[in-house]
Image (cartoon, rainbow over all chains, first blue to last red):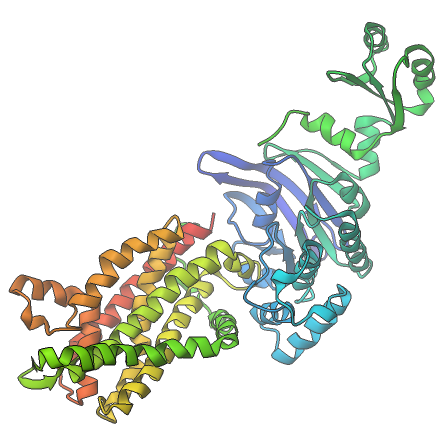
Length: 307
Length: 264
């Protein structure tokens, strides 16, 4: 029982194999109540495979996985009744109206008809789509559809919300709309497991992040800590750096990435290193900025393209 | 684990999947009603009026039947087959593959087995609705003997389950929606023609008669004809057993191929 209260999700040595391909390679992680945990990683890192195991869509190959303290292999129906899922693909029901999408979905959870209607209307208000309730879902914009997917995931009053790239493909306005609603839900104590490609989304919503690649966890921690540890406080980017910059960096053993036409140097403000760089090397363009999660991400997962 | 049969995953929640399809069906109920309402009229006009003057009487089980009396029950049997088979092939495939409706359902407490069961029972329900409408039309021409003819309704459910299950197996294995042409050409169309539908199977050579008895539609046509003529005998039990066994044996196979397809 105590276990149940401490962890919403508890995964140990979780593995997912597709034939001989190891999609998730023995990862362990947990999620505590009220927390938002973000899974970051390039395409094919194993994020979606991981969360699909958590919501009982995809059976795990080995390891152990408990959700709400229950074993996903045996208690999947009980677990799924308390989870809300936004899958990556938009799978709203095009045969049904906006309102029916929520009502019919509620019935999959055995929510009584009357309550289903009430909750559906309430959620449409929450996502500001009550005026569109009788329209076909195909007439909605991308952002509206995404909000409706979110509302649908909330129909069963879930304790855990699982979001697979919730704002991919949305314009900035629509993304912020989704974020605002997620923040409201967080304030009400919902736990969230999220995958995303957007670093701003991860650092805005999540208390804790896991960066994965090739099915393994690379690092785990609070966004600010990850940045400090792996990219320092500040970054200076020097465009078309000369030989002298490279020598300077090597001589001072600075954390850096040398790209084709760009040198990125990571350091702490207190090191005084930026002043020296600014004085000596900024022939063309120098950009000094705060270190971001994207710096961490690219440093850890590399810059080459993924499929 | 993911590739094995999980029959215990079936719960009464499959009704929710059925209800979803019913909600969609009711939206365009008029169109859905129109086909079974008008289709028999077309057939009866073409075969009953057009062909029967050429054909005259048909010898069947030692009696002389007018051609229209002979084919009307077959039209009912074909309706059962078409409605369930097409629902659980094209329509189920669209929901599964293009609309990702099953994926969404699988993020709820529904199991894959609930979904497939709901789909097959829905296919059988469509068979019942279409058959019932058609039965009314055909009865209007005095081609059905009552009350025996009412047995056609439970039969349309059983037949719908059996043919829907066959359809679902194909849905579990085809790569693209166009590939349904193959089972239709190899399985549905031959049955439509050679199951004692438009001529008695006694007109076929001996080997072909045996082959025809292996076709499930033959058994459905037999039963429909007996019910419409009001001639019940013990031999009909075998026809019922055949169709029941067909469903009972193929249903686990349908669950299995769909699990292999969708759970990974």
